[in-house]
Amino acid sequence: MRPALLTLALLCPSVALAAPVVDTARDLHCGRLFDARSGQLLGPHTVRVGDGRIQAVSAGIPATSPGGAVDLRAHTCMPGWTDLHVHLEDQSSPQSYSEGFRLDPVDYAFRSVGYAEKTLLAGFTSVRDLGGDVAPHLRDAINQGRVRGPRIFAAGRSIATTGGHADPTNGFNSTLSHLLGPPGPTEGVINSIDDARQAVRQRYKEGSDVIKITATGGVLSYARSGDAPQFTVDEVKAVVDTARDYGYRVAAHAHGTEGMKRAVLAGVTSIEHGTYMDDEVVRLMKQHGTWYVPTISAGRFVAEKAKIDGYFPEVVRPKAARIGAQIQDTFAKAYKAGIKIGFGTDMGVGPHGENAREFIYMVEAGMPAAVALQSATIRAAEVLGVDDQGVIEAGKRADIVAVPGDPLADIGVVMDVAFVMKDGTVYRQPTDDDAAGMP
Image (cartoon, rainbow, N blue to C red; front, side, top):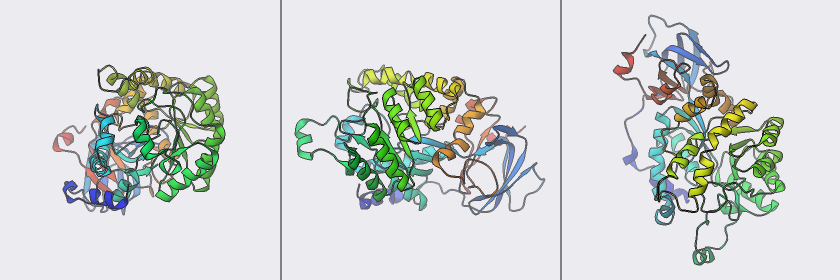
């Protein structure tokens, strides 16, 4: 998309909503504090923030606080959450496939503004957007303070092979395909080692923060296979090696076993979805230190929608039913095996703003609530390769969320976020009803 088009969409004053509380030095009086390093829930603490950073963290709550304080004594404070797999430019619906032919890029840009704010207000102060033209521009608009949303680590266009999961011409008829010609590395479609290098360099030119490849078929692409391998090991290695030259990490969408093996052996940072992970893939991921981002939410969503006539095209429907239903079981197996896990939902498949439901699904599958919360805080920061977020400690970004009660005892409270701060700016504050629940 041309930057001028996206600028027109993102600068439109009609998207302006209630102004957030701007960054000033203040104290947060927290009834409980989640220590992301240890996974422990601590007692009352005071968190001092200013200039976008956490200035001090101390046990207890003083009787008075200079400059006023935010009363979170009925809440648990924790680091702002990170969703490592979202797509902010769209959201699944029965019209999704036809809209690709009818809507302009600006339409998707307008939609992304609302989806970004929903995500932020749900407690997600950072996201990794894994595929889409809008995300790098939306990231810039958020960083400039023009719209409200999470900090975005943007992949830009995913890298696929011809006919692969992210080939943008899948489903086109022969006449349209002939008119447009075959997509190449600029469009994110590769068929050789040289193409792979060019595609990564194109993402660098376009300002991406991370590289995404589609190592196997996928559920929602207009193609029969949801799990066939779609790159050679050498092609993936060319992507990884070139990405490393530019300081990029590589996320690999992968459902099928062989595609996962090739991606892990080639050195990707994370496997996304991982549906048909077998014992050999588990062994390789542990050996290579590869992260797993499960996206249970997307699996459950597509499995449910596959039951509805007409929601998906018929070529997609059996994949959605088969693969979607498997992901939560795969997650349970991966956790028990000791694979490193980061939090991700694939929202854009499911509804934006419902990201925290993934915590509930993780706990249902056997992960302790504390470990699930770590996957979206300190572990997510490790996946991103950043060290200034994911924990509530002096010097780190002032990204803080609060929920009522005790999330380790009742993980369901993550769906009731009462307070959101990103870089020291407050976007959501408790209501009087929230405060009434103080212990």
